[in-house]
Length: 511
Image (cartoon, rainbow, N blue to C red; front, side):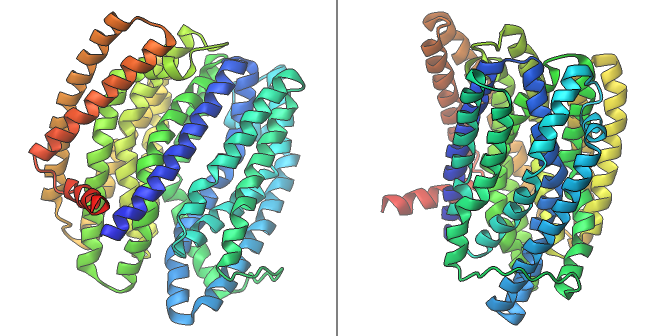
């Protein structure tokens, strides 16, 4: 477990650095273009390839883990690399076909993602989408390459790909403001390509040799496709929710789409640092213990992962609820991003952040099913959650406006979580639910006290230090630090089991 903890920490550190750079990218975009038509156009155009193929690419990557592990274990490294090579070529062929269709039906595609766009706004978005659609090829390849490197115990390289990506987009934003708006979308396309190019040296070091062979009849590919289709539905819930929220948000006027985007970015920042970092390490272990039919180890990995996520995510939810306004103000309120934009984004963030716990736990449970080669159950569960989300979106947005969209997503997320927990217990039996409940209760109690302490600290410091930028950084930073210290002390006092893993790792590092 010590090795797992170290690897998870490495991935987390790299992800934090990359995500901070991503936040800086969003700050530059907000300050440069504000929340008007141009930002709405760019955000929507970038969302289309991301959602369109990230769901598919994510499904491929998720399904790839157990299939690749099985091939490598039974037939060796050479056969597993041939399978990866064939899969890359198949993805290229499929994405080229999708790009062709996308260029023919671009306006219809934009209308799906932003039903409220009209006139110049619609025309400009269509032109942007025609350019960025070419990124689909590289998004697809990137998902495979990341998974391949992680399966070969290389977590460092995939953790660094956000650096060239963000640097290129930041440069594109700055250059586009002084030259031509199209520079921004062309630069974003180059940034997406850079993620694949950055990882190629690491892929080559594994002994991988690329060739142009394509074999659609390969039995492993057929099996992967059988796994992918249910995973696409079951694992694409968050992407579908983002699509639904974005489409309906486009009907509430300019700036709302962008506000949802910024709230989603902050949400994704937390999710990527903790949830994705943990799952990227734990999921291959789940697959291996499942393949080895080690039921006890499999259940332990599920329990510990759920507990660790509870321990990290619950205080983040509470802290963000308390400090959502100051966080958005500090990160984005400058240039063309004004106070009313801060209020709108903070309101959405407050609701969205509550759903992160449900989505995080569901991601763990989904991967538990995938490790068991059961993709049907997450598919059904995910489909039910999507139906709830659509119905709630339509109803709540009618009476509560744009905020109803975020509330609907959050409610549907927890309905889905309950369904996932019940079905997993039926599938594998008990996985120490008492321990998970105990960790949840202890974390909630600790986080509630932390939230009170953080709120008091922030209000007192704000009165003393004033409202300048440096003052904001200081009293927000100190308030977060107080929250971290209070929470850490409380979970140690309450003896949350998983804290011992972190403490053991720190002790070993000191020695």
